[in-house]
Image 1 (tube, one colour):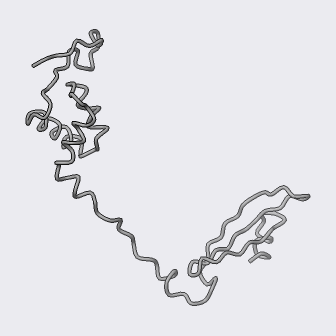
Image 2 (cartoon, one colour; image 1 turned 135 degrees about the vertical axis):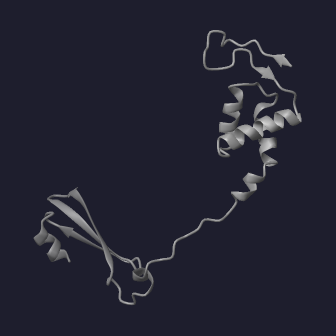
Image 3 (cartoon, rainbow, N blue to C red; image 1 turned 180 degrees about the horizontal axis):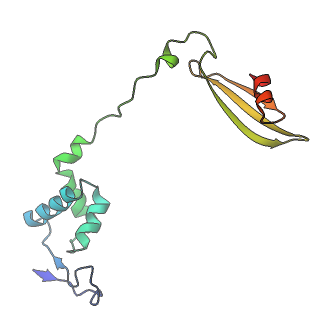
Length: 144
């Protein structure tokens, strides 16, 4: 096996003279798949970075991507996104603004300092905006 003379001569972490495994070799493929499974199928970039710590592949990125295409685990990740069902308040409420969310924002600097409040309906996603003079409970109840 051919080894590379690297500049990491005084390093303790990395391989000082990494071997160059042959291109398109079953041993290289098994090693890359071993690293892939060891790091829980993390993807081509992380797999390549981990492989580079101990060896130097010819045609680095292309070789790793080619090997990863043959991995059966990558095909299992192509599932669709699972969505949770909507809560009953968002589906069964026929009256607008029966179930709401409230959000204060501000201050807004107009000629006077004002605050805003947004009421948003869960069912119809309609919104209602109000401007308030302050963020007190009395101002909230006047806007509500």
